[in-house]
View (cartoon, each protein chain N blue to C red):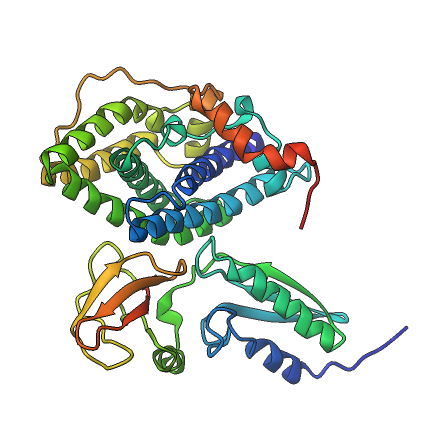
Amino acid sequence: MKSITIDKEKITDKIRNIPDPEIPVITIEDLGILREVVFTGDGVEVKITPTYTGCPAMKAIENEIVETMKEEGLQATVSLVYSPAWTTDWLSVEARKKLLEYGIAPPAEGEAANRLVIPKKNIACPHCGSASTTLVSQFGSTACKALYKCNTCLEPFDYFKCH
Amino acid sequence: MQNHLFNYLLRLGDTSLILSHRLAEWCGHGPILEEDIAMTNISLDLIGQARALLTYAGEVEGKGRTEDDLAYQRGERDYYNLLIVEQSNGDFAKTMMRQFLVSAYQHCLYDALRNSKDKTLAAIAEKSIKEVAYHLRHSSEWIKRLATGTEESGMRTRNALADLWLYTGDMFDADDTDNEMLKAGIGADQRKLQKAWEKIVGEVFEASSLDMPKDVFMVNGSRRAQHTEHLGHLLSEMQILQRTIPGAAW
């Protein structure tokens, strides 16, 4: 009977730092997708919560978790938890900063509840910082993003929608 | 009770799935690129909801059926989606009118289901309402623009309304399953749902100078899996791969 000593901290750390497949500068912990890591026998159960119900990246994240754990010699099962519902309000200050540096405008703070209303504050351009921007489409390249364009530097950019 | 819950979940899941399929038909054919993306994005949100609901339905049924088994191995006499979502896309006005009427319904429905005594259903509703809020906003804005735009867009919008209104009664029917679900504190109150829906629709129609149709004979039957002529054709397209090569997997 094989008995392995699991370095729980090291394993949890590895899981926390798994990058988002679409936005590799952000980890699944930054995004608030990772909910819980439970050690069971000689395996680990990782609970994640989907951002959007149809988000195709969730499968990629699930596979990444299983692969990463396999490298550590551990059997991982990934389960989806829907409650509490994921919200952009969970994005850390660090996460927002990373998004901006990557060229994606982070979601307006505290506006997750105002989905039926146009956001009050203008969204600043992540390239030049100008507040003179226009919404091109509420639906962008992925389920979580909207498409904007900057009236000052004329570059298009993605905006992470409030959710 | 489990049987009623299973039926209830199928109705919700099938409605999202069929509408998702209809919207996916627009892929590559949208009037402008932004709308091509918008409609397929909405379709993606809806298929996510369908997956969550059908997966849960399979668990409730307890016979080992997965979301795929339920989506691809049932015929139209075993599908329970609302009649309005299986209607053909028509022109952009008809697609937006259908989206508006259905998104308003789903928004009210999920708002009620967030407080469901069934924790899983409540969680799915809590998640889904956030996405539906964007669908509702998008389609409402289009109704206002199209209805009050040009003579042509106004005419197409009014034709769309005339084509679809007769399927809206089907949304608010109540049968034994609805009544049992309501009694158990799991499902929504169909009457309250209708009132909430009429309020939203009324407001948008007022802003669009559209009249709420009156005294229209309603076509119904989705709860008995009695469908319009469209569903059979739709499913034969949607299910062709899985029917041809049963058990096909990546």
